[in-house]
Image (tube, rainbow, N blue to C red; front, top):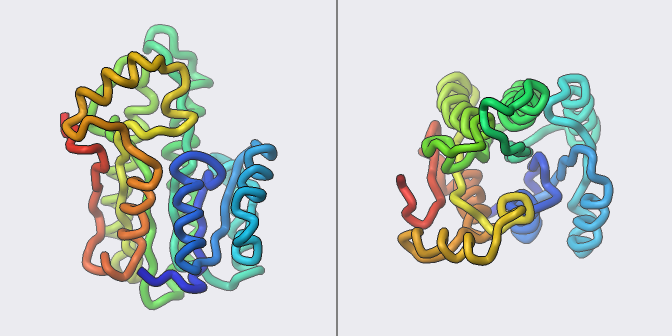
Length: 248
């Protein structure tokens, strides 16, 4: 895969799966714009961790659920780079609660960051992406897009919406030669996904997986890079579950 000097935006690019995507793209020669929301400390940690790529790594702060901030971010990208080759829509959050206890503010936050944020970034990326011969968008959803889960109704709904939004985007943007695909990770070893888990719960989940392990961030990044690349030039509108065979 050749990403040499391609300009790629990764939203939420300072932790977990997104940080690994940023790392692998930098290793392949891309110029990466790593978007982050509020956490300055995580941004600084990522900047230090990836300091060997400092000439090709740019951080841009924007809340992806805030339209004004998203517009400003894309204005900065246009001013600095004049184009965009790829977009990885990964920024997300989760708040666990049973439906009867879920307050509207928390529900809206999950929907707005996870789903509306991807709509906003896609919308304002289009003018930059369509100026290329071929561009690619990869949205990050979750296996919970198709697997209902107690205490996670807002998250499940948002992730299901991402998969359908991917398909709608693929149809609309094909005439601009913009491919749009989706990756739905299974349970992956990241600080957010395993927050509050006990060792016993993790082991039980591993044993239920056909491959007897949890996902690694590299597993997810590998799938994303493939879909972004020219090797996937005839693939659009697809959702790939990267879940070790956990299909139910």
